[in-house]
Image 1: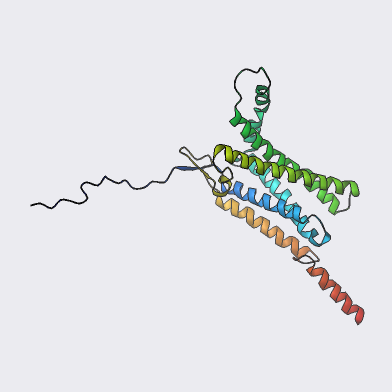
Image 2: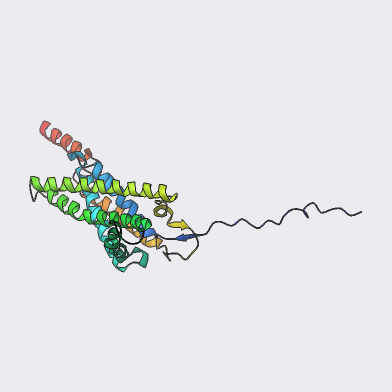
Length: 247
């Protein structure tokens, strides 16, 4: 009598393989994106009141510096980060709008329209930093009076609406495509086979960008007469003034 092999009737099992993924956004772009979002959120929240003025100014300067980084990286960085890629996308806008007119031949490419909307939002967000930063700098140095302050507030509100439109478009695209469109800005990757659009991650450059921002924040707050915390230095100065007056 022979003993039957208990595993003979079991199907062969191949080792589990993860779904293919490819890198589409490198680390410097992701770092820029989240620092840019953080700085705007903090600057908008600290816009009212003298108590948070130093924080507001510091974050405004940081936004301008991040814009400069994005422009330079978009000119000399890798292909997927080039600003020319945005312009090429937007170059198809007139033809796409023409396809929407009644009687136009051919079907409307709605996926192209979604990509155009995202590209427009990105360009608008980058462009609006210029009037926000310049008007804020002029207001901080008392250059233009009340009209410049009103321009700064208007530009800041326009910035907010662009951010909300950008977030809304991401949510809408995520729902239509049934895929989280914001996830690549966290992981840098999307599911699917094919070559990496971002061949290198450039993690060191991302860390250098973060270090530069943190160094600037430290230096800026050290230069502030109120110290790093809102109102901290003011109360200390007033206590010293009171002591000198009592003496």
